[in-house]
Length: 172
Image (cartoon, rainbow, N blue to C red):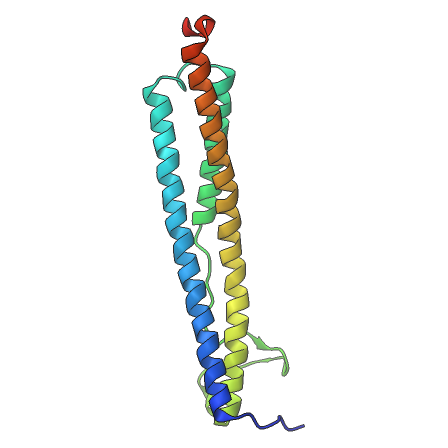
């Protein structure tokens, strides 16, 4: 069965579009890393605030909750930070149609220019999909860490208000 003839310009445009999408994915990953750094700094600042104000050093329900939330948050941030394998193209895994491994460059050099472009488009699509799973994992970890950071902030503020504005607790 012969594949339909595809215009060379269409193939080139499709290749450019796929590469642009993969570049955007790389940018998204870099943005997530920047957000992760911001969350680490924010958590360190919150921990410093609680330590300097001596709120975390005196055992109370608030301090126990704050310590637990910090522990959970740093675990989430470490989960987001864990090294992940990002895939590159050409995809040297099994070819879905042929159920055999393609060797680069040997097998690819036997393709006609059109077959080569089509195989590269398929490889780039597969690469994008595999890498997107990694980006989604990082994003999910950061989403949870952001929520926990907000929780730490609320608990710390409640702790501070309780200790400094309720006279009975000032004796602690």
